[in-house]
Amino acid sequence: MDVEVAEWVEKLRLAGYKVTRQRRVVLEVIAAVGMHLTPTEVYERARVNCPDLGLTTVYRTLDILSGLGLVRRVHLKDGCHSFASAGQGHCHHLICEGCGDVVEFEGGDLSPLINRVAQSTGFVIREHWLELFGTCPACQNKL
Amino acid sequence: MDVEVAEWVEKLRLAGYKVTRQRRVVLEVIAAVGMHLTPTEVYERARVNCPDLGLTTVYRTLDILSGLGLVRRVHLKDGCHSFASAGQGHCHHLICEGCGDVVEFEGGDLSPLINRVAQSTGFVIREHWLELFGTCPACQNKL
DNA sequence: ATATAATTGAAAAATATTTTCAATTACAGG
DNA sequence: CCTGTAATTGAAAATATTTTTCAATTATAT
Ligand SMILES: [Mn+2]
Ligand SMILES: [Mn+2]
Ligand SMILES: [Zn+2]
Ligand SMILES: [Zn+2]
Image 1: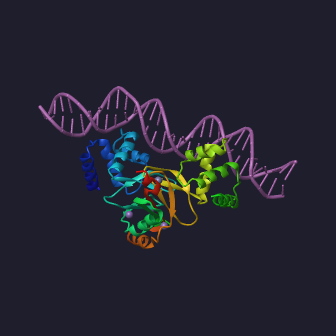
Image 2: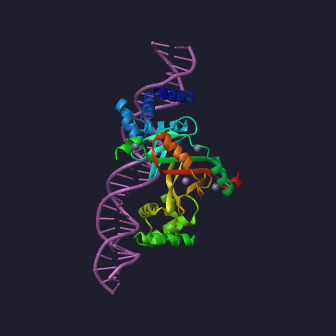
Image 3: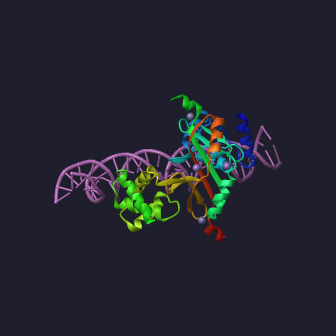
C-alpha cells in the first residue's frame, strides 16, 4: 500500500500537479482502506493525520484522482456519493453490501454481448460498466 | 405507451397506493420520453399538464416507482441523479451520451463470469449491474 | 354522501457540492 | 539554500439537491 501511494504520487507529479501534504494524506486514506468512502468520510479519516485539511480540498483531490483514473466513483442502488481505489487497467468493482468492502475484478470478455447489443440497436458502444453486489466472507460469518 | 401507463397505474393500485392526478402525470412523463430525466426535469415536464404539481411529490413518486421496480436510477460517470423507465424483468440500460436516450436490453447469461468471481473472492454475489454507453443512431448522424 | 387515512405542496431544514478569494506553499531556477 | 511565481489551500458564501414537517386536500371504501 505504501507502494500504491508512491505510484499515485508519481502520477500526480507527472500530470503536472504539485504534491502537497493534503493531497498525500487523501491518497493515503483511499489507498489504505479497501472500501468505498464518501468525500466526507475521506475528510474525517484524513484529518486524523492532517487536522487542517479542508473538505473542499478533498472534493478537489477526488476530482483529480478520478480524472487520472486512480479512483473511481462507486455506484450504489440509492446513489453514488462514494469513491474507491481503481487499479490499473480496465477493471470492475465487486461490493459488499454489509461492510462496503470493494474488490476489483477483471470482467471476462463482454464483446459478444456488446456486439450483439450494438447490432440490434444501431448504437456505437464506447464503454461499459459492470458492478457486482453481494456479501464478503467476513460479513458472511457475522450472520 | 398508454399501455405502459395503464399497467403502471394498475401496479400502483395493487400495491395499495392511491392513484392521484399527480402520480399519473409523473408516470406519463417517464413512460413517454425514452430518456433519463432528473427529478427536476420530470417536474418541469409534468407541470405542463399539471401546473400545481410540487417537486416534493416528484421525489416521492420516483421513490415509489423505483420501489416497485418500474423506474430505475441511471448511473452516469459523474453522478446518478436521473431516472428512466425500467421494463419488466431483469434488464440493463444502454445509454446515449449524446442525447440521454435510454434503451433496455437483456444481458446475456453472466453466470460463468459471476461464478468465477464468487469462487475467487469468496463473496456471495446477489446482484449485478451492467450499463453500456455509446452513441445512438440519431446522434451518430449529427456528426 | 361520508368518514378516514393517504397524499399533497409550501416552507423549512438538512445535506451535498461548487465557487470565490486572500493567504499559503511547492518547487523550478538561480 | 534563497527567491519568484503560479498552483494550491481553507473558510465562507453560494448553489444544488434531497428530506422533513405540517396543515389542507383528496382518493376511495363503505
Ligand atoms: Mn469489462
Ligand atoms: Mn444481467
Ligand atoms: Zn462485508
Ligand atoms: Zn443520442
